[in-house]
Image 1 (cartoon, rainbow, N blue to C red):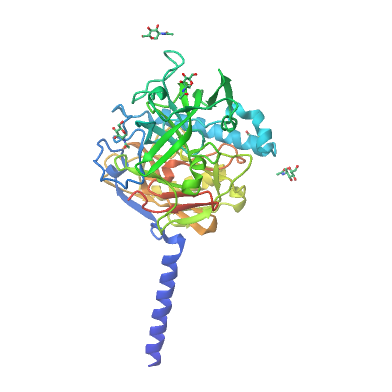
Image 2: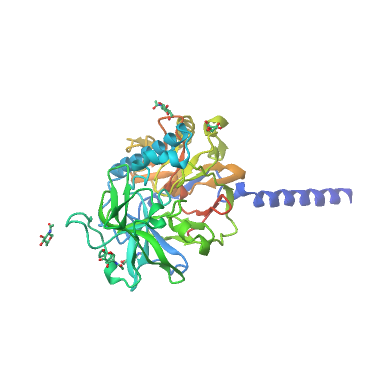
Length: 468
Ligand SMILES: *[C@@H]1O[C@H](CO)[C@@H](O)[C@H](O)[C@H]1NC(C)=O
Ligand SMILES: *[C@@H]1O[C@H](CO)[C@@H](O)[C@H](O)[C@H]1NC(C)=O
Ligand SMILES: *[C@@H]1O[C@H](CO)[C@@H](O)[C@H](O)[C@H]1NC(C)=O
Ligand SMILES: *[C@@H]1O[C@H](CO)[C@@H](O)[C@H](O)[C@H]1NC(C)=O
Ligand SMILES: *[C@@H]1O[C@H](CO)[C@@H](O)[C@H](O)[C@H]1NC(C)=O
């Protein structure tokens, strides 16, 4: 009898333990597993757009700019090294912004002195795009979405000169054909919300300068923005670009999801409560989503969002530790102590403080060496590459990023390796050059997670298996 009670108790205790483990945010995904065993073909970019099932009509469909589902692809393979070089240009720009602001101990006003470089990051080409509709009757445009900048702009007619609009996939937006378009005057308070503005014939003109010589300028206006049949935003303020150039590919413009008042999120705050979420798709064929408003899935776990007045556009969080193969790396807490790891949809590869990257790389290499994978040459900023020629299946150590409030992001296997070809699959992380620069969580590592930006409650959520 005593024995029976004992085993009943231990059984009860065990299930309690198991229950608490399941409840813990540490355990979503594959935390207990130390390796991903995947087919090599699942790592490679797809070449056909598998006709996706009808996604939720209240969500915008997100596809990678180079995915076969993107209306912008030319069919040719992107130049991966070039893409990663552009990614470094964005990161350099982000670091410059952040270090300038911290060094000056500045408020937003004093930062205004530096404005020319501050109004937008490098766009790069490693970005995700969505379709939005503008005007009445509405016209569809494929735009880049970017959490690192605020102003939404779309190329418009008339262009300033014949060559001042870059070629895009869809026809240019013609505000004179939209019954709901309005000009914004120079004296309007709406005009002064812009980081950079000027006047032309008493109309307000915007200007966005990017770090890599990309730029966009044009008239500031308003019109009806239709995201989905149920998400219609009348009088949405946007830039009607008539002189833009740079790395925008064939996108018609950009959707700004930063924190400042002119961003899509801020403009629609009263309707959606300052919350948005997205899922970036993992294979190039399946779609992700972008959604305004709350209603996060129940498996989303939240970590505190850090905001800095000197960095009014950006979203930060606390990265506290990293695990490889289920084991925490020996990285001193002080390495991450600046509580300023940037979460960015526009940066491709996650950047870590130099010593954190070195620890990650050496553990990863050790784990890969166990399987005797052949090393391959570096690819731009990626220095740990493998040649999987001849393998059907590969076994790759898991990587997990641990954030404040004990939230763990078990990086999807497609976020661990950046694969240019079977013979060159690289660890998709890089180190910063300067230990005082903040880390950046890039879009490769966010793939297949619901990422919830709950600005109202100052928190960022991650939920596994987000793209459905
Ligand atoms: C920034 O300036 C304020 C007021 O001048 C001062 O109290 C604060 O300690 C400074 N912070 C840093 C990090 O230097
Ligand atoms: C966006 O619209 C274009 C038509 O302009 C269409 O070909 C494409 O499939 C749409 N893409 C998405 C992601 O909805
Ligand atoms: C723009 O192109 C049109 C047609 O090609 C041409 O007639 C016109 O002169 C050009 N204008 C300028 C300013 O180059
Ligand atoms: C906006 O300004 C331009 C230039 O002055 C003018 O041609 C156009 O009619 C104006 N649009 C509206 C809707 O007022
Ligand atoms: C690292 O960054 C700090 C602060 O921004 C700067 O003072 C220092 O010169 C940088 N060091 C190098 C080697 O670039």
